Length: 112
Image 1 (cartoon, one colour):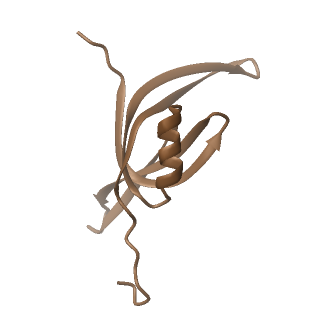
Image 2 (image 1 turned 90 degrees about the horizontal axis):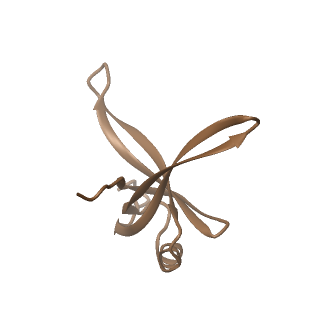
């Protein structure tokens, strides 16, 4: 049996940034809930995915923009490092696939 540690996110792009030889993309997946008054609210969960693959980096950098709805998929990797004599742990979302599902909706001058 194959072992897997994967993630899948459908959400809106926040920021794209180059960091060394990688591209990092922040994604917000919204979870609706009812508050105490029975009103629907959004609870955005922000995650940052890291892209190492050169071809995927080029395509994402050229074609993906803030606000786009995307589907990201990849593997989860836990890392650790020592800072100030303390071991710190991180969870990296290494993105192998990222595709745009929709562009952001642009509202007209009248808000529609």
